[in-house]
Image (cartoon, rainbow, N blue to C red; front, side, top):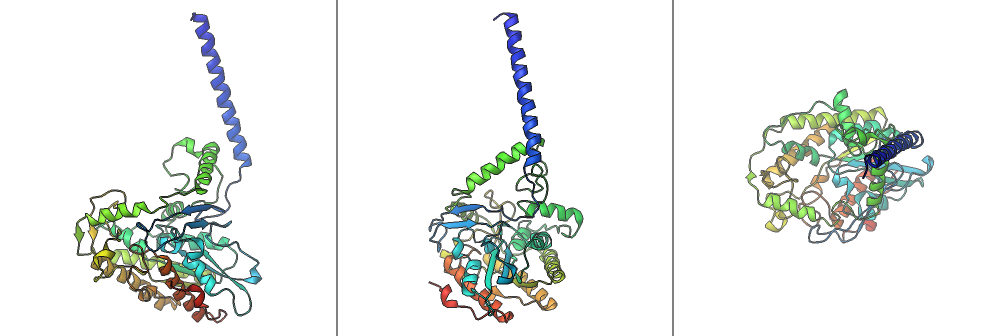
Length: 412
């Protein structure tokens, strides 16, 4: 090739690159103008659909494919109807509220609505589920502060809480360091980015870890990148995602089975103080919005007399990044039971002090594999038993609700 020909090719390549770059810049600027940003805080993406197909060898006690559908507010449950025609209950929590492996009609939130379909004056009972795996009481504080006020008027907020606070503390082993209070401005901003899938802001600058981490490279904060990422999320959400068969449980169980077990607990005092502070914060926020708040203790499978067949289902209670890699220490079942009892007792103390109509659900659910497929997550029968307890409690504390139709939530 002659020097002139090479020069012509290089010039053509440079022109093409310049045109491509200019086109991308124009497209980026147009997208920033036309793509709507978010005006809402959302725990889950709005109007999304996911599927899970748990296998019984990994998730015993669950038989159906699980549909996970959210409404316009990212809530797992039906859309809102007219204010005057609905009595609304919002359930907040972690994975034991989310019930990701259970089909939508088999979650305890849907079953509560089935047990109490309407109020005495004829309003339909709406029950929404905004649980998400891994969320702690710190996340629930920012949910109550930022998510709940966006919703149509609610009658009750019920929160199942405790297990993620406990396991997050135990991950630090004997070197627990209390975080800054979530009410601190910097701590709150960090928590918001963790709690929500979407926060208010421009399309290209999502302020959440879900869509854009704080240390993400510059190009990920572009409308083009975010459009492609969200399209990929939507595409994946129409198929089976997130280890739909539950195989990850067997990996985590093997980590625990082959680990060193610790009999003695660390000092839980500082972690319990943080937990109590967050529960008090939830009570304060509910009172400020004139919302009736029901806190619920966390049931578990943990029992000192648990048979070996049941112990093989356990995977929680490790130190360090025990889900990511093997080789970390774990706490024994008696130690975990003692720790959970202390967290549940702390919740009940707050309820007594604040005169909240709380439910000691942990005392009502036996430590049996009929009700749990692992340490804390409910089988289909377990979700029914939980729903029966919650429905009866809600009817007992609110005279506008009739006695629940418990036959509609059978335990078979």
